[in-house]
Amino acid sequence: MKYAIRNTMLAAALLGSMSAASADTIPGMRGHDHTGITVPDMKQAVDFFTEVVGCKKAMSFGPFADDKGTFMQDLLGVDPKAVIEEITLVRCGYGSNIELFKYTAPDQKDATPKNSDIGGYHIAFYVDDVAAAKAYLDAKGVKTRMGPLPVKEGPAAGQTILYFQAPWGLQLEAISYPEGMAYEKGAETVLWSPKSPEK
Image 1 (tube, rainbow, N blue to C red):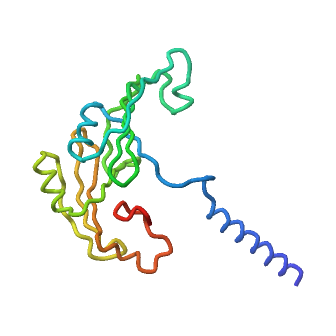
Image 2: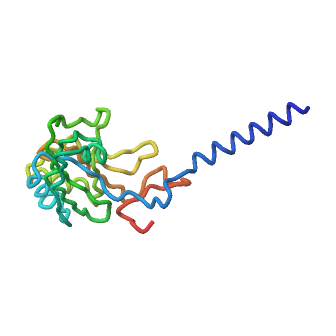
Image 3: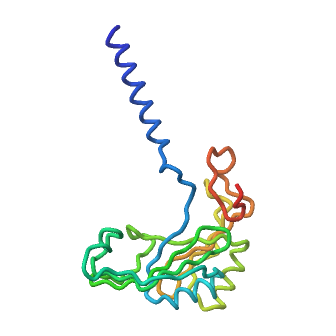
């Protein structure tokens, strides 16, 4: 009996600490502020985001380098001789910001990842009409993929998507779900959306 009580108390303590750990958060974390992307040509990138996507340039600064020490490595995990020539931030509608970096570095690689690569990524923009977005992007000479693709089954049912690419290969997506998505019915946590930024 004594062992059963002890084991029950131990199990309760372990389960309690597991649920507490799963509820942990960075102190004061409020949300996603920006996504940083390294680009091969800053003017080309800023032109694409402002003149094609419709973002607005907010600020630029730089350069940053450390000729004698390891500041760049210590701060950013890059080659100590890496140079950030320029940083530009753009704001894209009702969503988080995009921070564009123009780097040079002795060990710099030029390998834009596919979505399937480990470390691959894409940036998605909410639009009111994916078909209209595709027509617009096609008219601008932007490479688009198959779509618009409406999702009709599963928790993401209700969304329509289209992937497209920046001139240097960055993967992007246009997404819309004007009536919401199927998972939202009864969901404890609903994803933030720029179509209803106040929620």
